[in-house]
Structure formats: C-alpha cells, structure tokens
Figure 1 (spheres, rainbow, N blue to C red):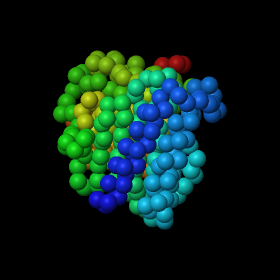
Figure 2: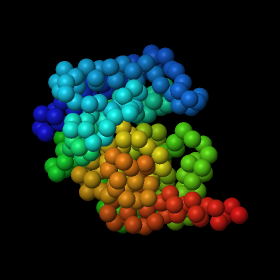
Figure 3: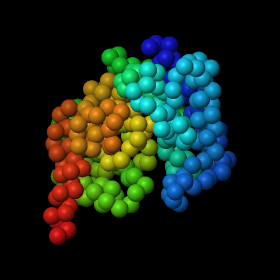
Figure 4: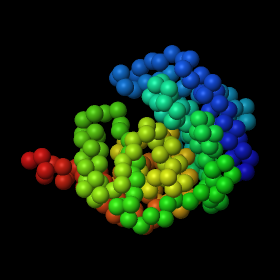
Amino acid sequence: MAEILQLAKEIATTAGKLILSLQGKTEIQYKETSYNLVTMADKESEKAIFSLIRSSMPDSIIMSEETLWQQNIMAERLWIIDPLDGTNNFAHSIPHYCVSVAYAEKGSVKVAVIYDPNRDELFTAESGSGAFCNGERITVSQNKSLKESVIATGFYYERGEMMQNTLFSIFRLFNENIQGIRRMGSAALDLAWVACGRYDGYFEYKLSPWDFAAGALLLKEAGGIFGDREGVDQGLRSQGVICSNKCLFEEFSGLVKWSLVSNEKQLVLR
C-alpha cells in the first residue's frame, strides 16, 4: 500500500496544480441545469489522472465523476476519483476546491488522498495507519457539545425534497444553539476538515462514491465516525453522509437522520 499511497499523492498533486493553473482560463459548460457545471479543468484534470493510473497500474478500474461513473464498487482494484470537487467554486474563482483520490479493493477503501491546491494542503490516509495533513497527524475535534460546534452541510442539485430536508435540518440544528453552519461547496474538503477538527460535524443527504470515498477513510483514520444519511456506515454504498467525532455522533445524527427529518417535517407542514 505504501507504493499505492505514493502514487495517489502524485495523482492528486499533479491534478491539483493543473487545475490551479487553469483558474479563470477555462470554458464553463452545463450538465442538466444551470447550477450543475463542468469545466475544461475538470476534464483536463481527469485526463491527467487517467494517464498516471493507466501507466502505473493498467489493470485497475477507474470510477470518475465526469466519465467513468458506472463501475463495480466491488472490483479487485478500483480507483475512485473526483478530478475537481467544488466545480461551482472553481468556475466563480472561489478558492475552495480540491482533487479527491481513493483506492479500494473489493469494496474496502485502502488509501485516500485529498489535495487542496489553493492552501497546498495534502490530506492522506492509509487504512489502519492514521490520517495526516502535509505529513502531520490529524485528529477530529474533541468537542462534546453541539452548542459549541460548527457544522458543515451541502446541497444536492435536486431542489425539491432534498433541499427542503436539508433546510429543515439546519433549522433543527440552530434550535440546538449550535455556533454556526457552513456550506462551502466541496464534500471532500468538508470531510477532510471534520477529520482535522476544523468542523465538528458534517451532513449531506445525496452524495456519490467519488464525493466521499477518500474523505470517509480520512475521517475514520482521524478518529471520527462516518455514517450514511441514516447514520449507518454502508461503505461505498452510502447514499449520503452524517459524520462527526465520537462524542457528538449520537446526538448529531439523531437530529439530522433523513427518515427522522422527513417524518417530523411532514408533521410540521400539516
């Protein structure tokens, strides 16, 4: 795994520096809606990543957000990548985006790297060996109270029930007198920031493996708890994310679980 971790670092930093060099210089295109974007930087980053993986480990399968997204998560050797996580930020020259790289075997993530080119922060984890940022070990926050917590969230592109439940959960959290909510626009960095203690928790109701595969391992290796949108760790099959440190998880997940929020919201709206 040491060689694979080294390759993952090379992949993430090469792609991240490429993206940074293209800031403000690339064409913006649209997917299904005006707020679901893709840029030439996404595609150029993906191309560079594919080249590095295929030259070093040609027998690997690649799952990527932009093109190769329908892949078997139980593959013997699977790379799960987001070549540019935070595309909307990048497109608007907001310096908060990253490259996310995970390597998995038979559904189990073994190596994770998230690179933030704007801050030059390289988050790394190897299963069973801890989590690091620029070579320094990191841990989740030791906060024991939601009232002293800053929580991160994210919004999926669907603006119906998904958006309503997210907003309702934010309302519930503010009723618990949390210190603040942050919505920064990069799921991978949200997970990395929980892992290093900047956030105390994070939830988002709809994510794909390339959004959370690397961040989930990083978080768990930093001492946190990772769950899906019902608070149960479903690995790469998770639909969303609820995560925090061990002290807060039960209370936090009890407020934002998808099913609980859906039921309570319906009672309030009647």
